[in-house]
Length: 389
Image (cartoon, rainbow, N blue to C red; front, side, top):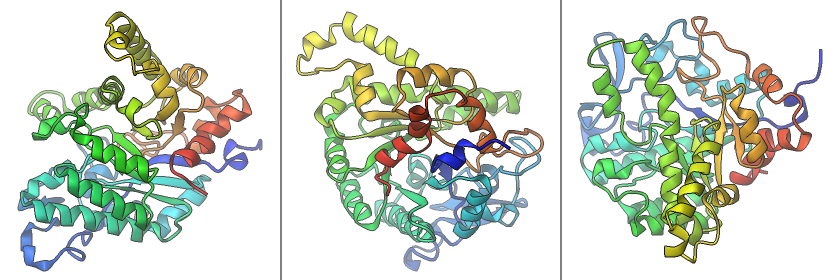
């Protein structure tokens, strides 16, 4: 049996999720808030998260598809049906050992992929307390092995001052990155290209924490309306594939607005978006940059969009077979590997949608690439982005 790349490198999975236990908030948030505290209720036989008295639209079973024999909207119905590795840190570490994975970067489920679900709570004080409670929970969860489990903080994006303070608190507590809302304008906040967010970027840069733009970190309302009729499975597949490229807008926001120029040491990561489209998107940005006169209006911008990307922006992949080669040829030090465990689109679905084990996929798609490129993809780039030992 030939040696795997996982035997030669500390493979770091740069996008996984924790299925939050039912008491994540009820055990950490002041009881004075009563039923407004996020909690699970069983509705028509299915566990769902209730936030601020409202159905948050995401139950633990929907986002925990690893090992499940079915495809969305079919899913596990209760938290008790979810595999222990999705919610228990020691079980997660055992799964990582079985897969040959050294480390995992961890993102939320219940609070939303940009913390937007907390807005359902309504009261800003409770919203902030819930964000803080999640961030404390995640550090506790990762304490099972802080060298291998890598926490990414949730963010109260609706309050810049509170967000900056939470960055400072979480940096001291061991968080390694910051989850940002992708499209704050949907929620009545300024768009990412506005200087309104500069205090956040400054705090992140000062603490050497990267900013994560996770797909779905804006709104799923359009997707929900699409589900109102028609073919649900086809619609889910269409949305789940096209939403990857939606992250190009966030990349354009921080480049064209000068954020990368003003904060040259700040790192951004496009999470769960794939990477094959990045080269094409950046060629378009470079073309429009030159032909649109951007450099003339902003002589202080000393790099092209592709060069800003190369200096401080990163992408993650887990399913591409062919497009990954072109991405790595152009940006060998900006691409990281992930599995998206335990989501419906992850590398670990059930028998209905079989997939390779992570090591088999990696060994196949990276075969023949230079050793230094393989090292960057599996270990080197993530070690730099997340300041790992």
